[in-house]
Length: 375
Image 1 (cartoon, rainbow, N blue to C red):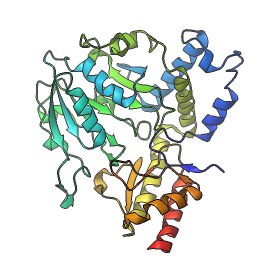
Image 2: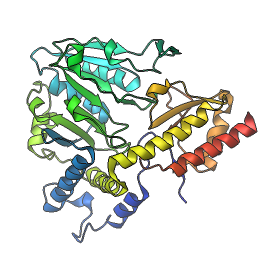
Image 3: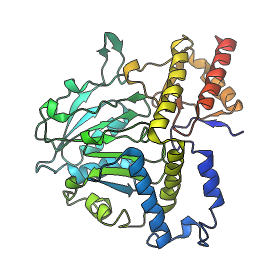
Image 4: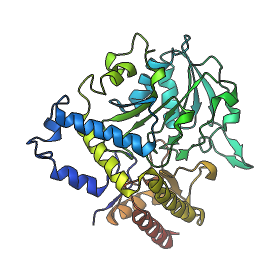
């Protein structure tokens, strides 16, 4: 039996996908070639890419008026590619950002290089949510609190903060905030394909594949077609959404093998019952882990319950001197990559689609035993 991999990304892939990729490594479907060796303009890879896009559209219910792009650069790359494409959408180069943790802060700082960027809302200070006092970066600003400039081109938010373990899915209608012409853009990297998404509320969603959709190297971008064609003059051609869409994501050589493996993941997800089935499984996993964390004082999670991530669960031991033995013994028990991000410390269990409830139960069992021995 393989160990359980709780890595935040690159993360665990379904074993079935890995086995298929291994079996096809030297000869894809009788072509005599590995996918790594194929021309991206040959009929074999064109088929792979087309099937990947079709399956991805089906899984997420992506409307026809959205282009689906397979790009390079990851989420950090999109922090620059997005403003280069959309910040001048309405003439003035303005954009607003909602800050809720490490990744949205990175997005904001990068966006500021391309125009007049403002903070629409921030959880960077202590707050009170539903009568409960919260530490900075452990809650999410309610949309009613956002200050969106009516002449901004877009508002950006990160809907799942991988490091802080905060998830926000109530994407607002910006018309209700007095900004009907402002486009909502979302970094959904660490919870893409884990739950349904409402594309009627957004103009653009991007997500690195290496959490729930495949290996590192390919980034999925979903953008309304009407928003393309406004790139800044400084935007490289390979990062211009209109150019990439016009070439079916093959303006330059795309990350072919990463797209291929992502396509295998999409087919695996369809076999599991699609995104709705994955959401049900993810709810069960998250509820089990948070229920245990809430039942003990030996471990703590600081995120407000209303915005706890189903994908990334940071937690802390009551005695930090126990961190090293916890990680050592966890690895010996076949529970891998539980160390928290260096900026936050503690532990973090990333429980993406490919990690089943069995793996979460194994973690809970280990944590209970560790508490019994050291509590």
